[in-house]
Length: 192
Ligand SMILES: O=C(CO)[C@@H](O)[C@H](O)[C@H](O)[C@H](O)COP(=O)(O)O
Ligand SMILES: [Zn+2]
Image (cartoon, rainbow, N blue to C red; front, top):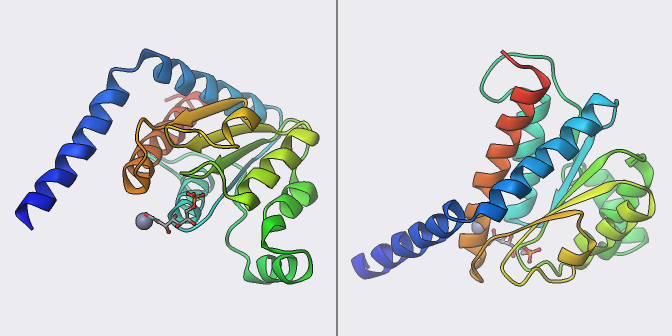
């Protein structure tokens, strides 16, 4: 067991070391912040979606923006598309699970909004279809995925590809970058 735990620490540390050394990743973080700040400053909003642990990320990050992150300031408009069981079951039952997020993007997304699409494989159909729906409506797509990128990468205006093929490592990287984006958006929208 100790060996397993040590192995998990080692993989997580080497994943974060690789991210910390990646200058292109820092540039992407700055670009994603600009995209979100431009959208919010123009009266737009940020939509989030993902499955499983990534649904938790979607809700977590929307919560940081609507409520607060490091300090008190006005709430920012952000919606996780993973939370309303009536909507999710209606779309899932009437159109199919693949459409659970796309339908909501069609209903809620407006030109100038940002859709944050989270999928460790990059291939979850409901996330990929929602990214396609977003592009079709002039909604910018910020993708969060793994090393491979999957189908989501080419659909994204900016795509965070965590340098791992292991779902938990990818999710840990997502969580870190998601927090960074929330902090930087807060600072840019409401400088202290
Ligand atoms: O949290 C985990 C694994 O750590 C799982 O719930 C995981 O999110 C689910 O299997 C998802 O359905 C995986 O989908 P995706 O990341 O490939 O889009
Ligand atoms: Zn998990």
